Length: 100
Image 1 (tube, rainbow, N blue to C red):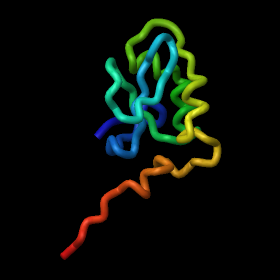
Image 2 (cartoon, rainbow, N blue to C red):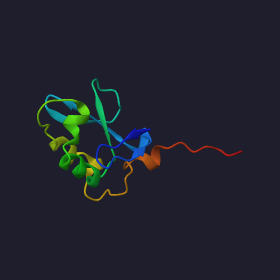
Image 3 (tube, one colour):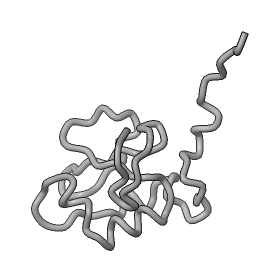
């Protein structure tokens, strides 16, 4: 369980995106393997806008100064049409468990 820096709601790590600071800019860590401190965020423009408005990224990542978020806005998970709160590919990649 992790907490979204935008809406402050707790959710499973599979439903959230990990964001790290690299060279003064925010980068989505899709594989969750990049070094350094990470911040967790629901995919979708709503939580991204809230996190930027609250200036949550520098505080969560413990960095001084502002971070460039242009890379996040270009990411497919933050496209304006995705307000569902899930990753675009998450429905297809989940395992099906045989109940028998």
